[in-house]
Image (cartoon, rainbow, N blue to C red; front, top):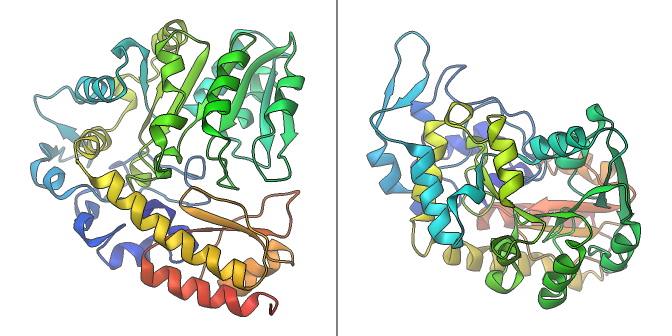
Length: 386
């Protein structure tokens, strides 16, 4: 929720408020990560953050106990952060392995969707096809072109969900991977839980299926919807997760992938997920977040209340909207998104990019309650009267 601040205020304004997500996670680490080398530069966190932009200023905050206990020191000449006498990658990997009930050698640390796309495209040579839903998040499929990969987009169905039958029909001998986002971005929709798991299982008999579950923890029945069990059972399935969403750590650029052993081993041999490619603060923050009992359920409930307030506005105005289960809403404004975005920007509200071919549809991220109220009032004034 905190990482989706692009819907309302700039990162600088947000940090100046000294709060992120909710006050109980308000201790920002901004004061200790100054300087050009303190954190890896990230130009676009949308993939797993909407349209948020950052240049190294963290919009995420650590749990309070994590900020007290960070064993860090500053190297005088470079401003780099380093840890002392700890193996943060191993600690995070062990924590994830216990949480996911999966072997450590099937875990690849890092925000690696683009890396996986490039690797899979290069490994099989030019001409491999990568299937995804459009409009959608494109980090993985955007990365396949340099190695000659071919992107195959499949339109969403009438409910703005992944059109699973249409996707299955596109799979052929050239298919290198199918990339699914569930809940989908930008619509926030989910496929029916049991049928989705069954679909991924059956499809994985034909090709690798990569499921981006960046927003899945916002759903109340997460355990029924995740396909992580398919990875554990040996299917050709990979699951991507991020700490940029419900954990509010977008600027720390940390996530992980659960992958088949052979695929995980192959990318690790290239240095992906290795200690030198990761940031100590990110690793410590991620580990602390997973150990923060009760936090996810608390934020999930708060997001659901705010999301329903948006949906009620749309119902009152007879506005079509998707059944989003994520930390954003998606609705048909009846006018081009660029026009809505410009009018909201004039009021200090940034809603990010459009999503062709759904040119009149607007995606707005859920922030803090007072911010949501301001944004809803502004949107209500722009919508046609009911």
